[in-house]
Length: 287
Ligand SMILES: [Fe+2]
Ligand SMILES: [Fe+2]
Image: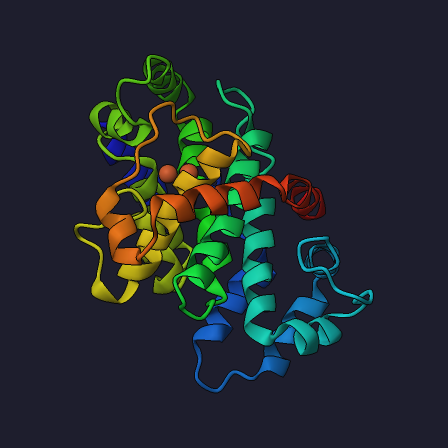
């Protein structure tokens, strides 16, 4: 069986070893799909899970949000930050807790990978703001989750993935190309398979799936997929975290379509670099 077949099998069979989302997160996803759901219903789910509530409040009070006063309850957080934002934070913290314990025996440092993904979340918001689109609550989450396929590879296919990472050292090809060649699928597709299993909404799944190659991306999510693509490059330029990729390229066509100049990229990368301690705070709050 190829790694791709094994990966599909792993997800389809829903083996117990596959990371599962905390029950509360599953409930949130299912409930959020229903038209009759109110903010109150969902808030109740969150409040019932103390661990998740505590984490959300920690993140909401982190330097990133720069709240003038301490937010001490989920209902207050919903009023101040917005309902969708809190749902998005709940999903982010849920995925983080499902995956952060995993992936010990690999060549790259998981802490650095999470810093990279948080940095991409920050950068994605900057890109969306800069290109005059309204910031959608899924923007940060899509950034935070864009590289989780790497964690799945590390945990379930450690030997094969170690070989893949060894091949990146020369920096001759981007990591996702080496993954595709060696494993039959890249980390973006791996993340897609997992998030589909988790029933994540399309506005998060698709930008993650197409963050390295937008050619087959549905029109509806194309802008966000390009925003994550550019944010990934910006985060690499800022030197925050590490993604395991040694060959970083930016498709000029993406920048052109987003309306970003090379100078914009430099400016946004500098801005992100100056927020390094906020990225670290955010990781600390999530952990
Ligand atoms: Fe990636
Ligand atoms: Fe990345």
